[in-house]
Length: 378
Length: 188
Image 1: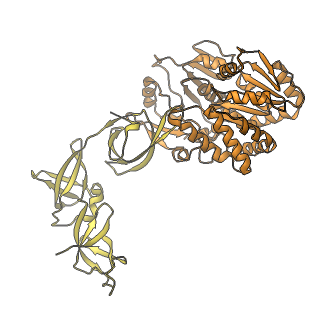
Image 2: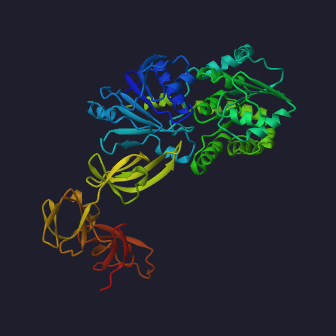
Image 3: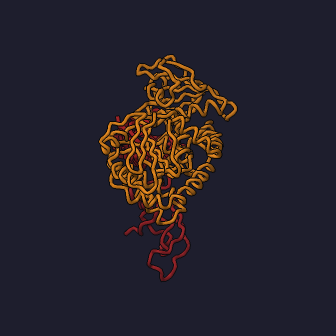
């Protein structure tokens, strides 16, 4: 099967929590539908998560959205559903039994992918692209790993993403217009930071640092899990649309943005705090300095994954900046005081910024996840 | 049933109705507290080797294989006939002999292990070491008794093996069948 004769795709997504699962699957579905000759069906068990990141979605069992047929994945899955030519099981969610049986019945078995989580750990290269035979049905499934090396599946990147980013940044009026849409008018020489994260006690040290900062800081907080931590430290009850000014800090709670507008937010800001997987990838394409709040896992496994990424990401930076970024990311993820490391990173922001461009360029040369997965079809 | 995360080297599982021996199983933690198990598998029916990943919660039927002690009896072209203590006979093609093939010779009395799947013998395993006679090798190298210098030797059944330089024609040698390596000269 080649990119020219692909027909139907089914993408299955279970929302575990937050918006990362649906965020990745929705991007995958949209890019396939827009850039390849495909009919894409997205099965999602919690439609509300999609509505949150794509508000034009409605509460309906079935709808056509951005050329994608979006269907609610009910526990009692309709046994009459005919499997697609290509099936993507996102993040090891288990497919419905009736659907598996129908896959087995097809004259030509579907191309079946298990789209795994993004990780920079070494073992990923050894598993990416391997076929797994279903123990009972004998159907073959490819384990497909997103990644940041040539031996992995790459990252989701729409064909025109970088071009759109560059067009946005080429004209300062675009940034001003976007911020105005968020009801923000930044002051001159203000450092603009976006802050998207999980609950985090490290926020206290960061807010105090910004309040006392010699440079004015405008912090834009999409309404998310980090907001209670902010409110707790400031002794406030800030909600969407609220603003807090204290010392050099101006903090504004902005709405939870659509995927398209979240990209613009990342482009518009000087430094981005991001979390999980989807916003982590978008921050890399934004080519700005970023701090990753990784999804916490049992036994501190997430710190191994964090360090595996840092090992690649930091290459080419001065040892001092490497140390500062490592310290800031570690402290942010461990929920401890990160004021010193923040100040150290900020002092070398120009190099960090330049590094963001180099990193983005190097990732871009790997090819994008969707074209890689299309190429992996028979 | 076993789950993917319970798989260990030495287990035999059913995949698509066929018995597969797990030679290696490595668990790596993926996202959201899930895991990927990378396995090295050997198909016990045809010897096919593969590397394949599984999810930690994939479910497998595990197989307990029957095993019996057997000895080689005779060759009935094209089948090799083994016999157990009850004089029950089991016939295998050369392809099915697997690790046993290099050591088959008339008159051998090694006690081997036959492995059965659904009543059919699928492999014969030799004992960990066997004693065989060298029928040809180049003359010994004088003075070298270290055993570190090796040379090729041919056994009665035509099998070639590397032996110590001091081994001579007519010597009986002990071979490790797991590695197909010469261990020592056998004492008379």
